[in-house]
Image 1 (cartoon, rainbow, N blue to C red):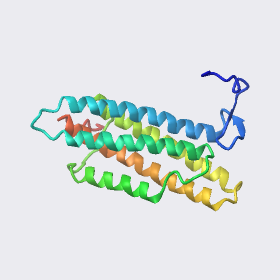
Image 2: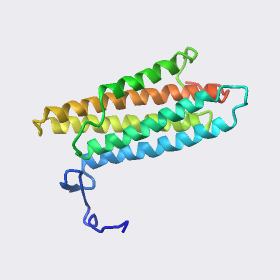
Image 3: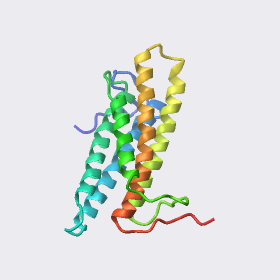
Length: 197
């Protein structure tokens, strides 16, 4: 059965078995990670469509690299959701943080200098990347609030350290979305839509 009726009273279970309100900060946080995963799925599908329209004499591998990166991100977001729902285990590590940094550096090396603020516009893929960026920032804010809330409530150093690592990973993820949006501009031979005061 897809429906269990156990949440009809407005509560839900965490991975450790504890039941909490569906509007609890912890639920809001991993629910936002789930929402972000869906937006990344949309961006991934848009990039796959871009790949189908790239002329045969141009490197399709660039699009494949980015769709592969997003596939990794989606799996890591599931890991993050598991951690945020109080599942035991190491779900994100400093290696995951460094991996996203390497992706950012590789994309950044291909981008022209930026001389103005850029609007989230130009194509569906560019706008989708910026939606991923802004939802990532919202997830980060919730995670920081969760860290501040739980800091005085827990004595588990391992859990606290993992949360700080997860916050760093999410912070890098928003930067990745920004440079990927700029990369989509190049892949689609678009001009960036600059802010005009």
